[in-house]
Image 1 (spheres, rainbow, N blue to C red):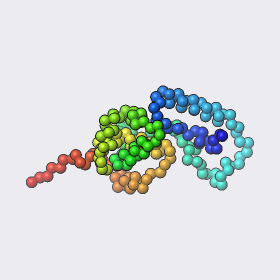
Image 2: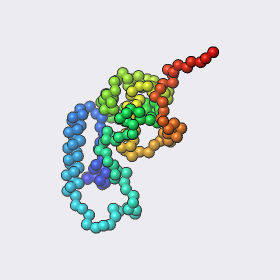
Image 3: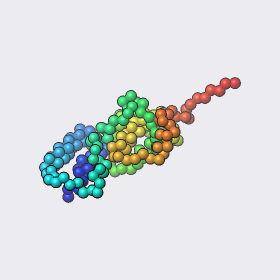
Length: 187
């Protein structure tokens, strides 16, 4: 049965399984060619009547997406490495655990995708506790960038906690583990 919406045809499937990146790229190109061929085969509408909705101004979520993948989303400050982080370490660890529950998900492939993160670094980050536990770890920053790109790509809204942190800390959360901070006091 053909898809009912154009967005269903154009929606790429993000699959982080055991396939190599070349196999995934080849399959992705084949799907893109099939989508272009299918859309070229469709006939244009002959009337100027709207698309069937009551308001012509409303469009679907995927109607104006310029991205093909979460990798195509560019965040401000990402290249310099000073992207402000608005999710604490506990939130990132929770999101990673949700990823681990997906079938056929391989953590090593995901770590390579988000920035060639070492498995030892990942294990240290996951073993840390608290909202700042593991904040100095590279896994924290790389995973935050990944989850932020996926959130934007999928068109999801920000959580209430995220909005509150953005209002309280406009520069983002500090990437410092407070358990390892030295405090000197004068006599």
